[in-house]
Amino acid sequence: MTPALSVLETTFGYDSFRGQQEEIVQHVIAGGDALVLMPTGGGKSLCYQIPALVREGTGVVVSPLIALMQDQVDALSAVGARAAFLNSTQSFEERARVEAAFVAGELDLLYLAPERLKLESTAALLERGTVALFAIDEAHCVAQWGHDFRPDYLTLSMLHERWPNVPRIALTATATEATHREITTRLDLGAARHFVSSFDRPNIQYRIAPKQQPQKQLLDLIRTEHPGDAGIVYCLSRASVEKTAAFLAENGVPALPYHAGLPAEVRAANQSRFLRDDGLVMVATIAFGMGIDKPDVRFVAHLDLPKSVEGYYQETGRAGRDGLPSTAWLAYGLQDVVQQRRMIADNDGDAEHRRKLSQHLDAMLALCETIECRRVQLLKYFGEESTPCGNCDTCLQPVEGWDGTVPAQKLLSTVVRLKRERGQQFGAGHIIDILLGKQTERMSQQGHDALTTFGIGTDLSEAEWRGVVRQLLAQGLLSVSADGYGTLVITEASGQVLSGGREVRLRKEAPRNGSARRASGGSRRSAPVDLPVSATDLFEQLRAWRAGVAREQGVPAYVVFGDATLRGIAVTRPSSLEELSTISGVGEKKLETYGDAVLGVVAG
Image 1 (cartoon, rainbow, N blue to C red):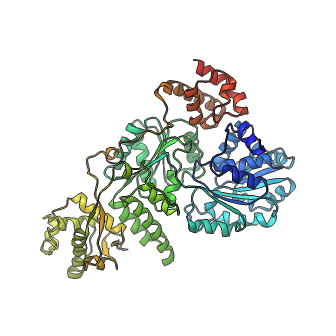
Image 2: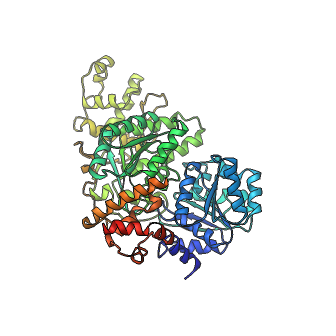
């Protein structure tokens, strides 16, 4: 048995590596640099933790979030590793103790924020001890066009200059080819081995529903598919976060808000509760989530359109880190497209910056509007070819496409006539009223009932016309004016449609029957890791025991045991410590600490 495999079994309780883990681990143990692109839940942490435990010295981990360092250290301590962190939350005495332990060679892993590495005092400290390796977690933070850019990461190229013989391993769960190149350049990893795993997360079911009453749709999703489950709900604004959290709480779903406008102590307390308690829902802006290691998040929901596919992938990837079935659900509508287009038009950046933002949004809109497999489209964005997954809404309930050229011409003609004949611009609602021939007071005041396109669109419903507008915006055949009012204008490409030189293919709108769940994948398939009915009661008893232990120790429940380990125990019902030791996730330290108590729960 290799030293790496021995550590994997005895410390972490796993009998084999997954995917490229072993190759990465052996490469770093041998002193090689590595850049690792691996999906969330793919086991990135072990790729540096095991080499740090095998190599002489201390593995120094650059981690972007101070608030999560304690949880990372707690998780390592629970398996018997010697871990600590240095950050601004500690007293002078605490930092002095950690520094002394590092210099004395008494730490396996030391966590630092990138800001601290800029300090000469930190560099001097590292030179007094023995560094086994440098691990740069969340490496996409170095990319200017990444969704979590952190300027402090730009200084990390100094690690190679100052410690040329210490191996470096940079890791991220998401990177396009452009971001991959930027990470390579900025961290000076051109000579490193690059390990790119599949970005596929087959346990996540991707679903995008037409936005009707998003809060009620969300409540339906939680009540029917995820009662009592932990989840994350992303909203675009702070006000929406507050309202949604309050709505869920009023309807019996324990929910907490998280956004940058809350006091730091409230954010920290809410994050701590989410990590430590079972079944909480965190409603947040994108300020929340990076570095969150909670493995049993069963769903991630978006009530507003994400700005990029990278951001969407990173956020949805926080569901199902334990490999068990999970849901990524997004409510999406016309107003989302108008709002995002307007935000880009109003952006203070230069033309190149706005162009990049538009490219990110175009890719996200393509994912929303596809009639093909969502997963195929998502993976293609990251340069990975795949086949239909059978576990997304478009696979479970195939969507029809239709020839929308004539409706597109009618709508674009209306926009043109308003501008050319009246010198006016209007938003989607009024233009749709013209096409439907609605005789409103505003219509007669403006004289728009005299337009030649008035009433020529009665063959489609208002909802269908809103879908046409949304999809024309997504395809760049319609745009939003920079006037701040969401008015619609034609684009250069519109002329090809109006002249009959371009066909417009559209996605058929799902019926607006009030049930987003049934319309977008109610026939959810059962995954092979689903818990047998015979093991359900014991699993819940084990969860209750785990919750009590976690509260006593002041650590997140998953630090004691993850759901996947509890499921393994519930299914196999071990009757001895030897049998318990064969369950995935039960290493020597946890067997010694919790073994007798677990057997007591199993015995009943």
